[in-house]
Image (cartoon, rainbow, N blue to C red; front, side, top):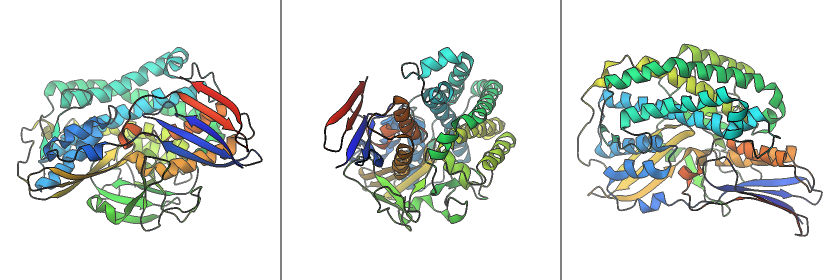
Length: 483
């Protein structure tokens, strides 16, 4: 008879989920699962809507990631119109996406994960949060808040508001960058650049303290997937798909993202509402713990993007990328270093923005290509902060949506997150009484991926943290609730 621990829901992530940890008769971890308990509704209730409305609708999937959905949806609309948008419109979309990467990564690092990293995995859970961080590290917390504000201001300057801007549309964008907006962005760059460089130094100083976590938080061979530019450089908006393995070998390159179904397949499991994408050529893992090194498990997001790219193309971030790879001896396989990769991507985004501000196209009035429906199927894609995002629409002759498929970054990472939970649990959990700090490490392993379950599914209601521990015959040994 097996035993089971339930963590319901996982805390300090965006959305609702629970973790079940199954123990064998000796009290050792046999398996663990990451259950997404929210039901996705967006794909279905978009049916029948005009495709012109889709950027505005799908942008409301999440208040953290609205720009990601806005841009991928608008790009799907571009395909339905069969147009090439004006160069100025693409550059402006890129600028907003960089602002999105900054604000989302800053939220993940400073608000959701820094309490674990700076206060300690075993610190008092009552203060192991952003408010405890403010009390313990007020300057770092304040600078992190201002860093996120910088990214949000870029979104507001371009789109009119920080959340759900109705700005990118099929065929282009609605407004250009004003001179006042350019000055405001430019004036904020020195402060935020200093903030992220200080945060990088801080994180690198903590690596030794978290050696055990770095070895067990999703440290396993897998594939990595993301977009790269024409010469293999870091990409966040366009480009082609590349897969590399855990040794850094390119196993597929220059794949057309609009043909994603040729290399990505999706599976479902009865115990989670979140789909399980996998690399089609290597197949879906058949083992319960997903341990097959020949399976199609892959990871996306900042760790993957730094593992697949040749370089970033800016001075400071390329310097940090070299050190990042030196520390990982090439390809970095530990998901603990998603945190490190986010900080490097913040720096890369700031440097890219600084360069872009000198481009006069950002002030152009030629922002939109106008056309009617020319195709009945369109696929849009981009790199969201958490990883590659696909929007796939099928419409009728009147432009009404017939079918929608969304593959969200958290979905891409689903198999890897399940394997991460099992790896952490096997290392840190033993016996019938589970210390809170050990359970926090299981949750922290999930937070390393920065999952956005509001994007991946759709949240309804709220749930407290509920942990139950059962013995081999089903007797309840421990029951803890945390609201």
